[in-house]
Length: 429
Ligand SMILES: CC(C)=CCC/C(C)=C/CC/C(C)=C/COP(=O)(O)OP(=O)(O)O
Ligand SMILES: [Zn+2]
Image (tube, rainbow, N blue to C red; front, side, top):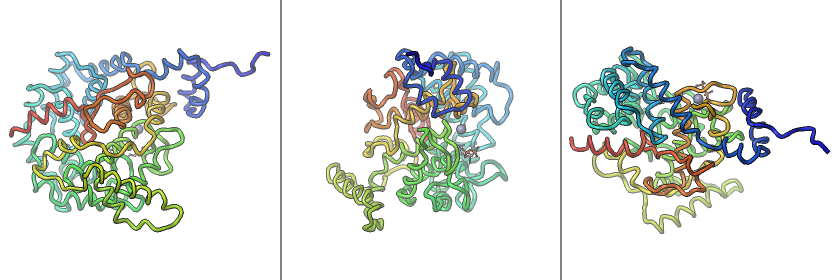
């Protein structure tokens, strides 16, 4: 007898993508012919590069307009290209360096984007174009508020993003000092909410973007132990939805960009196990049925620390070296989220087969979502590796192994090779 519901085709799936039907996409993906499934699960490298290169060219020809979004577009595009293991041609690179070295001020977010872009381009010309000691350090100090927080720009808002962008740039450029760091921890601490996540400013709602920024900042200033990491982990673990992607905050829709903002939080947490162990041991676990998980976690920590002997030792040495040392520690914890499910969301719901990524089915692709979906995908693929430099096992990578992206340094969201080159370059002075 003939079936009344014929098997869906790839174009029907694309139709559902446009209509935003996530559950239909998953349900019926399974009944596609194998070759069509394989196609859908592949990172469409060539198409993404085509989309990204087109965007980069559109920023030119001489990158001459200094509007606030351009350094961000540059970073989103250059970082995406680097994650895909490619580089840009010489003319585009020269134009980008000239443009970026002219626009490192007067806004912290664009400064961060410009610095990360130049580090991503790499090489002496790009790295030495950053006037870090005179101009940049003076600018960072001018943005600092007596509360400990940073302002985004002169007379601008003080928030967790400003703290992160200032501290991230200072750390990666080796210009961190006590004056910059003073009271930043108090400010971030005042933004951790009753839910466990971190808000943009005191009294606001916890959000994934700010939770990433706040946690990364606390790690970079060696004060992560001051946060309530147990409630932060509880909060972020509950942000992965039934659609497999992450939402930015409670009761909101999932969105591909949170694959990095929330996924990145997990990548950081994986290397905080001594502090988490300490907080678990001193937490009031109680003896109710619902506390079994926590008691088991304490027991597991006691065991693993017995094996590795890595109790929460404070970080020694230079402030700017914390980011570098952080990745030298093994990731003693496995991923505390469903990393395969997230890869499924990114590839089936956010990836646009013609190139680029989007927030969710029903939306259009853009460079911001392309950057943060690819960053999140890389975090997932490398989330089972204890050592940041060792390639993941095939079972950690959803779809063909050729989907594997370059690893990032999760504190800065810079591809690891490029971060290491910058670390070497700036560590001498
Ligand atoms: C380094 C740097 C500048 C980081 C930025 C971090 C970041 C993404 C912050 C999120 C800001 C925010 C509250 C978005 C909510 O938008 P929405 O209400 O449209 O989205 P939602 O419904 O998903 O919460
Ligand atoms: Zn988004």
